[in-house]
Image (cartoon, rainbow, N blue to C red; front, side, top):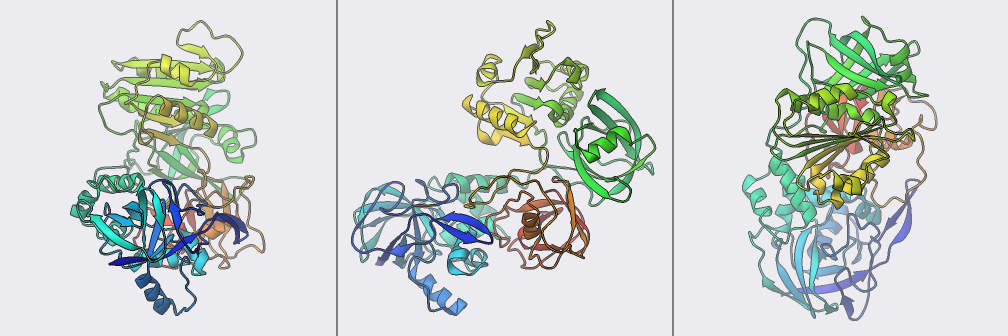
Amino acid sequence: MAKLLSVNVGMPVDVSWQGRTVRTGAWKSPVPGRRMVRRLNVEGDGQGDLAGHGGEIRAVLVYQLQSYAYWRQRLGRDDLAFGMFGENFTVDGLPDDEVCIGDRYRIGEAEFEVTQPRVTCYRVGMRLGEPAMASLLVAHHRPGFYLRVITEGRVQAGDGITLLSRGPGELSVADTDALLYLPGRDPAKLRTALRIPALSPGWQQSFRELAAAGQPGPEPGPPGFRPMRVARVGPETPDVSSVHLGPTDGTPLPEGRPGQYLSLRLAVGGTARAVRSYSLSAAPADGTYRISVKHEPHGTVSGYIHTRLRAGDLVDVAGPRGTFVLEEGTGPVVLLSAGIGVTPVLAMLHRLAAVRDPRPVWWIHTAHDRAHHAFAAEAHALLARLPHAHEHIHYTSKTPPSGDDRVTRGRPTAASLTALGVPADADAYLCGPTAFMDDLSGHLRALGLRPERIRTERFGALAAVNPGVTPTAPVRPHQPPGPQGTGPLVTFARSGLATPWSPARASLLELAEACSVPTRWSCRTGVCHTCVTPLVTGDVAYTTPPLELPEPGTVLVCCATPAGEVVLDL
């Protein structure tokens, strides 16, 4: 019979790591006697990052004596004490390749259900002093697993572990972990995983996305930049101008999907090359792309476009690309935008109008006033071509609306969305300032829209995902401290920053962090793909080969270095 060898607990502590402070509960130690296990955790235990650990689905982490023996030999270490892998229960038995998702066990007075493998997280590497540990746990099929507490009760070291029932599908923890993180997935096992009720919602969603990956989806644009000629530049409002771009050689343009963007590389200020990304604001027509750019008060590139760019000029263009795209379907569509955020959803409206789409469409746009309402007449004409369109405009200026019954003063609210009849089964597409999208996303969820049906497109850098790192005041992206690098130029397109590479940095992720460019990561070892980033142009080399290569046109910045000049969508 399997046996509970040690009960380990630890409250979250602040740990200094790479010049930052990480809040983590990974430092756990054995405790004597009986311990109460409740719905959320073991008595005396806590988790520092509830987004990735803890909660009802991940109340108790289990790791095995046999894996301790394996790592002692593999790592050449004799200091691996129980609790060092962050586990609450150290057990003799229950190997990852035999325990199945949905298995139920009795330990002491409590009953448990297996819900998922361990989350691949850099903090186990912190605890052990082995930075690659998250990758090793997956590659060697020894992740450990989480338990949900079915019946609360007391447990203690020495308790026997009794299998009460086998999980449906009998998909092992090791196979489930490999199914998410390793290549060569078995479609039959993927289907099995989606039929296991006990599997945690997060893993279910990941498997649904993997199952859908074989369906047609957004393709990255052609790699690299190509020269394009400015056909014309024309004002839309006092601070918004549209730029029409065409090929220089008469070859057809790759068709952009509605919602995608182009990346432009411009020689601004003499020899300096700046890269910026702008959404397509219409479907390609007459062999040209149209982007529309707001002149920001201190925007060097937007200022150049508005004051210097002329018909006949040549511009380097990469794209179209991006995953914020109008999806096929039959249900209602809600297009929500503010200010220049209108551009990608306007391209979506063009597509809907072109086919006279029968779906109900809600067009809800916010502008300062009529003078600054870009594409007002164009959007109105497109909506008139749809059989079931609803048009609602909000002006934030204190100037009273002009009597147009489509215009409301103020910003959209939960109450106004309810009054407009926005349906709970709609697919919503939002673009605008971050606060606008955060507020409206919350309002839509309150109306009953499922989070996966609310899609957003953010200008500038995406919000950082740095699990466990104590937040600090945001810093504008800047050149890295210390001597300037002598390697190839690395451009962070969303952040508007370019800097030479230095071999003093271990990865593109480390360079981005040194520049205060917002980053997204979790394992930092090429496993979880949280850091996957579109590669606009250039080539990279992997210092540590990832367990699974990312999609073409993307890069795992946590373990990559530039093989030449690169432009990243960061």
